Each structure stands twice: as structure tokens, then as C-alpha cells.
Length: 408
Image (cartoon, rainbow, N blue to C red):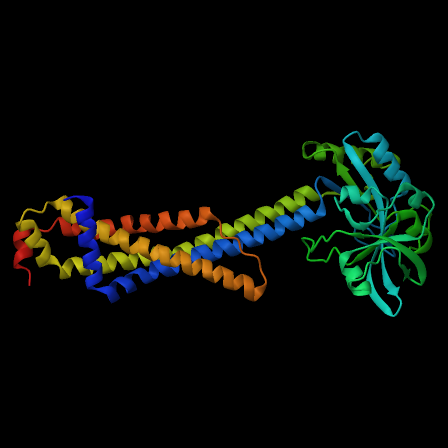
């Protein structure tokens, strides 16, 4: 018996019991739809995290001041003022694996434009900060060394601040008051979006580091920075750059003889890589959980096919009596099982794609349906049909023709 004839017989058998065929496919439909939707949601989460990681910048090392002790109580990292602008200059000069280094100070306060005001983060940073963060200006210009050296009262606005203070108007050239001090807006930064910690990176105002140190941030010593951001020359030398920074600062801060360092370094690339791996693991977990329903659907197909074999025992006996071979019977029932699962798979792919789109629209969450996941789901549905349809097909092919003809 050729394949086309087997396919026609299988289709006729499925059409004969349409409701049973649909109910048999239902488990596969739900399973495939769940796999497609879950993989789309997981891929969307991976995409969001990868975008957030990209927004931070690449090959970044963060140097934070150490802790301090007061009244027997130790504060956490950043509690002491142990880093200075001189440390930044030394890192740039003496660490060959470092491309850029910039000191930063952080504060918060009210920014006012006319009768509009907005409470936001105020960051002081050297011009190199935007090279490290890979953060371009979309309107106006960025800081230059003259702004830094002269402690000029100029500022850059994040998109969130610009929208809340100026709406759709162009803020470049306008005067805003930061902590009651007038600053000239010289540029607006490109939109960055949320950080991996969920903070709005665009809700910030940036001023030159020396301007912030003199006018906006109170410090017990001049030249103090709250943190140092460093960009290694490449991903391959980022660990080497971190070692060079640690060695240099230990020497500059006289950290010897087992003395506890008054600074800490954090390799953001490693931290963010762990977050990305966690997201991928979650995607695989979601897919694995959804795949369980495919196994349940496969078991349902096997049960229904066994019932079908029992109901069609006399038919099988007649076909064998007129010359059908065991392989013909085997392939007929295998074809029916595979058709059921693959038709269910096609319907499930459509429902899964629709469900993922609905989730994206209702929850404003990105979902990514890759062609690869569709192909895998379709092939897997066929594999389920082969695996769970083999036993009923083998049982049908193994019937004794005489016993089958006598079956009532």
C-alpha cells in the first residue's frame, strides 16, 4: 500500500469520528500553545534584560568607597569618603588595560523650570562618563573639558526630566534651577530606559563633576568622589583591568599587611552576565513546564488510539483477510496518530502565537516568537504522535486475522 492511500484511509477514519478526533487533539493543542506562549514570554524577558544590560554599557568596573565605623557600628560599602579625583587620574595614567575612568558624585533635589518642578537624581560626572556609559546626546552638546575645569554651571537632562519640565519644547539653552542654583541646559541625553534594578535611568540631571563638588554636594574634603566608573579596553582584559585598579588603589591608600581595603570593585559585566543566565534558565524552565502538558496530551492520544483499535478490530480482520499486511496496518494507525498530533500542533501554534500577542498587549510586556520555536514545536508534536502512537499501532498490526474476524 503506498503512502497516499494510507493517508487517505487515515483521514477518512479521523473524519468518521470528528468529535473524538478533536478531543484527542485537545491535549496537544493546549500543550503546543502553552510551549509557544511560555517560550515567547521567556524570550521577551531575556530581550528586556539584554536591553537593560546594553543600556548600562560594556566592560564596566565600578569602584566604590569602603565602609566606616562609628560608635562600634560599621556602615555598608560607600559609607566612607575614601575615593578622590586624584585616584581617577592615577587609574587613567597607571592602568594600561583601562580605556576611560570618571569620578561621580550623586545627590537628589528639586529641579525647577518656571512654574514646573521635578524631584530627581543629580549626578556629577566628568565628560568621560558618557563614553563609559555609551550614552550619546540627542539634542545640544555634552560636557567638555572646559566645562569641567571651570566648574561651569551647565547641565544635561535625561529624557524623563526633560519631558516633565519642558513637555514637547526644546530645553536646550533654557535656564533651570537645581537646588536654587541656576544652570544652563546644554543638551538632552538619549533615552536609556530602565536599569536591571528597575530604576528609570532617564530620571536624572547631569552636571560637570567639579561643578557638583563645589555647589551641590557637601563633602568634608575637596576632590572627593562618591564612586569611580571605569571602562576596560575590551572584554578580554576586564579582569586584568580590575586587578590593576585594585593593586594601584591598595598602593595609593597604603593598604598593606592584611589591612582591610577602604574600597571595593565590582565587575558589572559579570553581575549582568549572571542576570542574563538566570533569565535564560527561567525561559528553559517555563518551556519545560509547558512541555509536561504535551506528554499528557500524548498519553491521551495513546489511550484513544487503543480504544480505536478495539472498536475497529473486525475492520482490521477484514483488511488482513483481503491481503493487507501487518506493516500496512501498522502504518495506517501510525499515520492517524501523527496526523492528529501535527494537526493539533498547527492549531496550537496559532493559539500560542495569539496568546503571546494578547499577553503583550494586555500587560505591555514584550514577547518574542522565534521561527525556531515554531519549528521545534511542530516537529515535537510529530514526535509525540510517533512515540505514543507506536504501541496502539503495533497492537493493531499484531492481531490474529481469524480472532479479529470473530470479534463482536
